[in-house]
Every structure is written in structure tokens, then in C-alpha cells.
Amino acid sequence: MAFAIKAEVADPLAMTFTFTAQKTMYGGRHIARGDTVFVFASETEGGRGMIARGVVLSADAIARRPGVARQTPRVSISIARTALARRPLGRNELRPLTDWTDGQPGTELNFKFYRQATNKIVGISDEAAAFLSGFF
Image 1: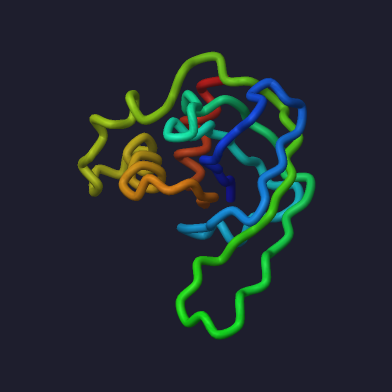
Image 2: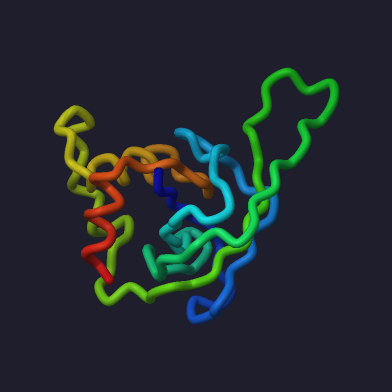
């Protein structure tokens, strides 16, 4: 399974990215060393959408806080960049894809990242990973 992360990215050209205590949704908590991950620089944080593809160097689950009933699992990850995106893909490009039942990879990404616009790590389908690979 491949993954994607949408988060604040300080340096889009960095060779490694480190993200601390990121929310996970849609299977994102299963991210592990060696997994492929697509990095999206959050538009709400000044980014421009997908910027890179990489490989997870480390993934550490964050312990849940005691006494809090409902908590979103969080993970800290480090990613080695393997490629930079050649074409833009972000909220503007994915916005028209809103037929949640059409099975298209772009719609899957719009649903997982922008329906609830918080920064997060998500698991993506093989079809979505192949779609994203076309941007490199």
C-alpha cells in the first residue's frame, strides 16, 4: 500500500522531510519504513499541492494520551525524497472531482485530502498511486 501526506512543508526542495505527530486517516496509521509516500505541501499552510515522492525512512506511532476517549492516531515520519513533481496537483486540480462513487483515483484523493481539509497521512489505493506516479 502506498501513502500520501498533506502537511506544512518548510523547504519543498529538501532531500529529506520530517513530520512530527501527524494525524492519520484512511489507513494512514499503517505507514512503515520502506513504504512509498507522496508529499503534498498544504495549501492552507502556503504550499502548492503535491511536490514530491519519497520512501519512508522511519515511522513511529505516538502513544495515546491517557484519559481521552476518542483520539486520532498520530505518527511521526521521516521521508527521503526520490523525485520532484513535474506538474501541479492540488486542491484546484482536484476540486471538480466530487462524485464520491465514481471510483476515479483523483476523486479518491479529493475525498481523503480536501473533504476534511486537515493535514494528515492517508493510505491510498494502487490506482491512486499509479495516477500520482504520472506526475513525476
